[in-house]
Image (tube, rainbow over all chains, first blue to last red; front, side, top):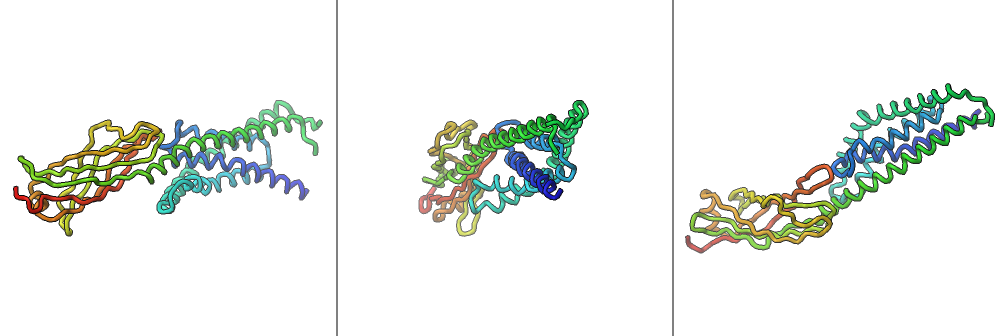
Length: 139
Length: 174
């Protein structure tokens, strides 16, 4: 049982880590919206897909929330790092502060609701599939 | 517990969607990063210097004639000079703020090419400043060249620092 729990926790952490770059990219694109060559809302499609896929996987509620918390919670830090990368040393602190502040605001206002709604949609699709084809437990 | 066939299939789809999202975000970031780092490098590399500047008596008053050399590395978006703005001071005395607009659509360099432009600009000196400015030793100019940068979603104003000496008609009578 312990091994199963550990495997579940590891899988949810891996899924959260896989969704993290998509979430951070969306935040970084929001901070650098003037440089995005397409409409800025397009940047939110990859994280929405990633979170929907996490919901679709049909894990327990704890695992699902752990994956979402990992990807949403760490995304402002990663986004700040991504924006900071080409900045010169004399302007780094100002760029970091602006990027982090905007990323936190977008995480609270956009990413958290988007993560919950996307995961819920993924879970709903999974529920529909399960209802249409009840499990037979045959391999 | 063995996995049902549906469960295995749904998990495979879930993995594929997650991988697709990851690849899409990497591609998107590569595109944004290319433009953004280009912009950062350009702002670090853009330079403006005063080649020659003088304040002169003219038949109908006095004017400042200034030549500015502007250089910038190649960049993937269009850049235009909007105006040259500077203050003139000598030993703590302010002799006016000068805003010399450059003709609309003056493109410094086509997209993807470096800039190397010399601007010859003129501005009248207000009568209250001309008397004091022209009869003293050279004054100091400090300001910036205001650039209009055409980013994918916005026209951004970038200020490039400009400093130099303004020679005067010191010793020359009107």
